[in-house]
Length: 460
Ligand SMILES: *[C@@H]1O[C@H](CO)[C@@H](O)[C@H](O)[C@H]1NC(C)=O
Ligand SMILES: *[C@@H]1O[C@H](CO)[C@@H](O)[C@H](O)[C@H]1NC(C)=O
Ligand SMILES: *[C@@H]1O[C@H](CO)[C@@H](O)[C@H](O)[C@H]1NC(C)=O
Ligand SMILES: *[C@@H]1O[C@H](CO)[C@@H](O)[C@H](O)[C@H]1NC(C)=O
Image (cartoon, rainbow, N blue to C red; front, side, top):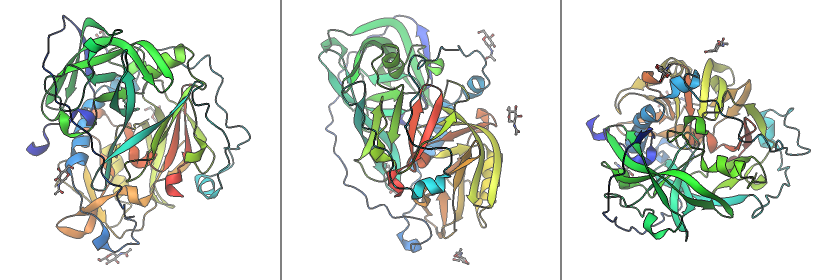
């Protein structure tokens, strides 16, 4: 698998370490690149109802990169999940009243009933008053929704750049005076509020690395502003950072896992009482560049078709939920006992091998394949499936189009599934739940300590 040895920084896998030392000078300018948008894709539904000629061929480029990238991104997960040496944090949303979709009964509806229900919410987000509804762009490669990015403004005056949104990490970083970055970066010297420090931040991703300096500046999204936000200003990256349209990454997990050991942008908004609600909500579009959205401090009822179901966090580290099952059909279920990190920075669903083996065993004719390196499984393209994940006994279905990554090119009857095996270095109780899942469920990340899931308009 030499071809996939280098990982893109954006699929990252941030493993930042904060190191004391003097900042190195890295003055080279980077090239400006005008971003072009690809046209909307006619995403065919690979659910067994189409002819197999319609199913696109699996392109392993990004899927394989992600499998490798997760090893680095979650290398600390065992320690964190088991609470070794994790600094406990006060509840960053403590002073906010718990969000309540009033008059909506979320208890008595199963996900299926919820999907059938008509839209019931009339909540209007107070945009401009403690909230920002921010359009995001889906970066697409073939049939895969690779990553989602949106704007963030840094500095005084503001420099607006594109950042991947990532609930699976808790550091903010941006290319800055970057020697070898193609995409536009942040120019600290043009900002009157920019402050550098002597603390280094080192980002390790697979075989490559990125190097930066812990810095501070004003950061905003819409009307929401934090002064003196800490971030890693990256001045050098190795290898192929440059194949995606982002200048950095916005980590939206908890500071307990931030490697620069500073509050996240969202936690600073909370602490400074800038928000109407102590939460953000995500809509990930399927197969179209436009239409995704992150609602900071708000819930956008137009993105959901039913009530929210809530699940308590296991800890304020990752957005971690207790996952007790995965099924391929109503009666075919694998019980699990996993800590599931809800990760908008991942595309696929990653689980330990014993679980993934047991899951594909529920699909007759499927097998593990080493053709793309470790981690992938093939299954008959015409299999009738109803993929569901279960959190605290409640089942959440995933749209069939999102399960199928495409057919194997030499075998037109076998397809590759989006449920992949996690590297055994990451322990045997971690699951990483990526956009494959979030495309079916509008998700609410509530700092009172829970995640809410409502059926997405994508599936209506
Ligand atoms: C916790 O931190 C201490 C001191 O840095 C270290 O000696 C110990 O190995 C760490 N424990 C774990 C489980 O990482
Ligand atoms: C697979 O996707 C990558 C990244 O988008 C692209 O560069 C490559 O040409 C694709 N390969 C095929 C065979 O389509
Ligand atoms: C799940 O795992 C946790 C810790 O790993 C353990 O305490 C608990 O008993 C397990 N539950 C089941 C149902 O196996
Ligand atoms: C799927 O296709 C295979 C052969 O192409 C056939 O034997 C099998 O019955 C089909 N299964 C379903 C569920 O249609």
